[in-house]
Every structure is written in structure tokens, then in C-alpha cells.
Image 1 (spheres, rainbow, N blue to C red):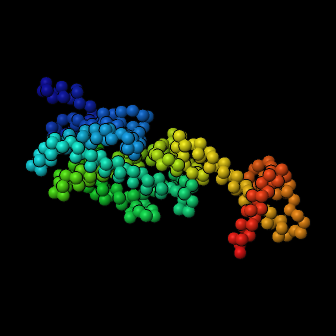
Image 2: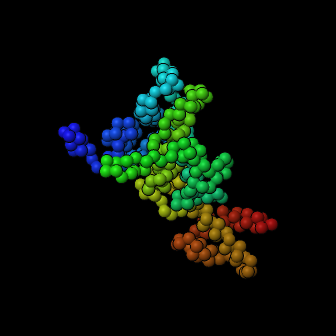
Image 3: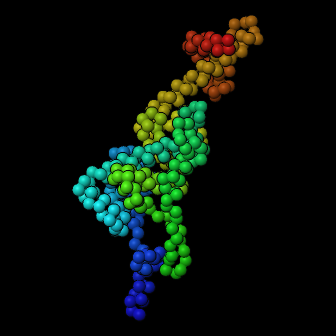
Length: 316
């Protein structure tokens, strides 16, 4: 009775029970997993580190952390594999490379699903989805994750001390059956599963639309807040924001000159008098909210007339 009473005192009601010991289940908390130690959003921070490719030691520690528990379930195949890893720790590089590469593919597919098919500068994170099959991709993001992860790792039912049930996703286990295809293949598949597992966790979180990719340097970064509006002039990380400003300025200038050229053609199509420059400036102001005068048209007259000629030639 003393032992039972003591157990009841030290076991919290919400703890799930281990099928091996029958007592409170000891699991790896997120804050103890390598890569999850810092940052206001640990999972998002972890994924950005994996995508960066410069934190390979962290990825190794993460994989080793869970392999330690997999290795407790000993089989002759696993014993042989463990000995190979001891003799050649460099074998784990296959899993590391695979996890990073697969994570990047999934991140690109997710981010690109929100981009316009006709104008890559247009990005709408709210439109992202896992269902669409993007150009030059063999399948959708969903089918990729389903093949790598979901079919092999269904949810697991666990029981709490009070008898209530809890549905929990188990972490990817090392598949010893893959060893028949060689250590390299087995480790590469293990890395893919971990990439799919962590990325699917991000997709199921409120931060799935925070992650993005810079159009200029191609690095991955995260917005402090998810963008709800359409981005029309490209996506840029904080380090490349200057490039974004230049691009937006150039785009706005080009649009204004195009408007001036179109209005120039409109005037000439219905009037015999010369095009009044003051009128062109007013038309541009109406379309773009600017406050130009005749002088702006005079300063850009050569460029406007070049656009007028190009538009006429385009019409044949």
C-alpha cells in the first residue's frame, strides 16, 4: 500500500502511461530536443535552422537523440547496424543530407503554392495549399508527405492515469527493414521521414504561413506576422529589403510611364491637336495618386514616346 500511495502522489493525472513499465511515460519534451532550445517559436526556429544548411551539427544531434531510443529495441539487424555506426560515425551524413534536402523541397513546394503562376513577383501566403501539383513537380506536397510519412506512422492511442485516452503522433522510427537495401538507403529514408514529420508539424501549426523565401538571395526566413494581403512586387528577407525597395520603385516608375504612353495614344486617336503635357500628367495622377505637373512629362518625354511606339507596334 505504501508504494501505491507514493506512486499516486508523484504521478500527475494528465500523465500518459508507458506500455513497457505501466507507469508514467517518460517522453522527450520539445525543450530538450536539440534545435528546440531557443526562439519564441521553437518548431519554426528549428525548421529554419535545418533549411539554412549551416547547422548540420544540430541536425546530427537531433537525429542521434531519437536514434538512441530506437536502438533500445534490439534485433540482429539493428545490432549489426549499430556496430557499423560505431566504426564509421560518418555514415550519419546520409541522413543529415537527406533531411536537409527533403525539408527544402517541402518548403519550396509549400511557399510556391501561394505564388502566381503567371507573375512570380506576386505572392499570396493565404492561398498556400498542399493539394495542388505545381509545375515541374511530380506530385503534390500532400502526396509527398503521405508517401514518406503518413502511411507508415499512424496516430497512436495512449491512456492517462485516470483512464481517459489521448491521441498522439509518434515520432519516426528507424526502419530496420530498409537495411536490406544498404545502410546509405536506410539512413536517407530516415532523414526524409524526419523532414516530413517536422514539416507536417509546421503545417498543422498557426505559423505555417510565417515561413517564406527571399526572391533575391533565396534564403529562408520567417515573418513576425503572417501576411494576409497579396505581395505584388516580390518577397525579400530583412537583409535584402533594399533590393525590394529598389524593385518596387522601379516597378512604380515603369507603371507610371506606361500609363502616360497609353493616355498619349488615347489623345492622338481622337484629337488632331498636339498632346497637352499638362493633361498627360493629370491622367497619370488619377491612376497612381501622384502629384506630377507638366515638367514631369517633359523630363520623361523620350521614354514615354518610346513606350508609345512600342505599344503601337504591339498592336500591329
